[in-house]
Image (cartoon, rainbow, N blue to C red; front, side, top):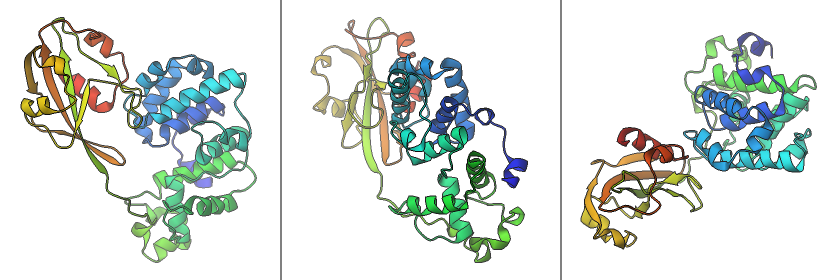
Length: 339
């Protein structure tokens, strides 16, 4: 905490102990670098300054604002929980660790952060930074993504935590891992714990923490049909299939077993709309090389097909209307170049 007092970065969420603001920052930063997450945090607070504002917004509004952060289940859970607190708890944020854990999308890490920072409850947080620092300092060989790791590291952090200022302790631990005990090129020479750090003394800094290698990512082939009618309107639909990008909007999608390289191959796809066979004036592949989009457990090979219809299409939307909808980042990148 002494190190933290001298070295901590200045962030807007550190100026508050309001549960809504702390919760919002923790959800955004769960899987996002601080530099990327800060603009989103500011935009959310500008658009939804209170929990009630977030609770009364539509899901489409929330997803649109979240666009580009990935893992949209975080945004849906954020919105669901805001509505629950607003409607069922009269807008009052839960103030115990156990009650925080009952909220949708709030796990041990987020509940510990809110409990300690907002309510001075001594619950230690364990995130990637804390895993790394503790693993190196104590020479812990337990893989951090094993089934038993969280319990072991949580207990270690809990044992180190004093009874006073638990929020400061947690933020200090995370900040130390983020700035000092970094994944690559840790600043061991200036580390105040170097003399007693097992990894440093045994020259194991770069081999800790241990992580189990996971199975290879699944490879999928996406073909987006960018179908424009004579009014310069496009077919656009909400993705209702469970899984990635649920409830986001997209161009009609055909998933294939391999990359489709010709319009004949596209026509041969069993799900290609039969009504378009006689109603097309142009069809061609927009990107000659597939776009590779990597997710945590999936690798998408994406093709966009530029298609022009001869007539007006029912349910087609204008570019302006489409630009207001929440879309996956791969479609957003395409639209910025295509539109």
